[in-house]
Amino acid sequence: MMRKFLLAVTFLALGSVAALAADFNGKWTGQTQGRNGPQTITFNFKVDGTTLTGTITTPRGDTDISNGKIDGDNISFDQVMNFNGNSFTISYKGTIAGDTIKFTRSFPSGPNGDRPPQEFTANRGDAAPAPAPQQ
View 1 (cartoon, one colour):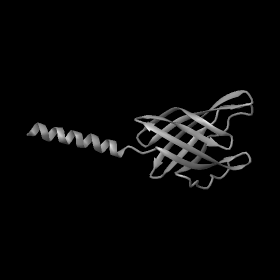
View 2 (cartoon, rainbow, N blue to C red; view 1 turned 60 degrees about the horizontal axis):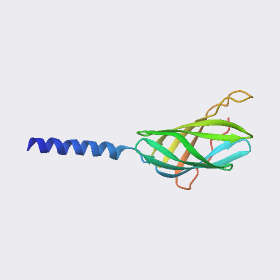
View 3 (cartoon, one colour; view 1 turned 90 degrees about the vertical axis):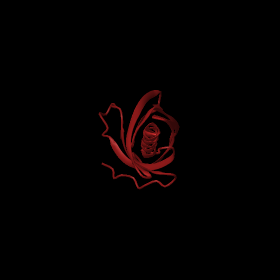
């Protein structure tokens, strides 16, 4: 009887941990400050355990997510961009709170020096929050 009780408690505990894991699946929309003003960015996330895949849609088109990882309430992934024959990687890190993800994205060093990291939020679904003020 004690063995069944301990087994039940173990399954309940493991189920509770799984229930506490954040749900990043689906469509998320945000706005970032671009060179020519605000731009909408849409993420379509697919989560399999701790692995994240999906796409990022910007005014330049769709890009696949690479190196995607989920760790509790934290998400990280890369976006490889090609521009005029040059390839560069933008790295994203975020933390979920309900139906909002607070992101920081980091850009590679460029010919004009380093671009500072950019913070923005994304909401679940189609509702894009207002862009962060330009710094």
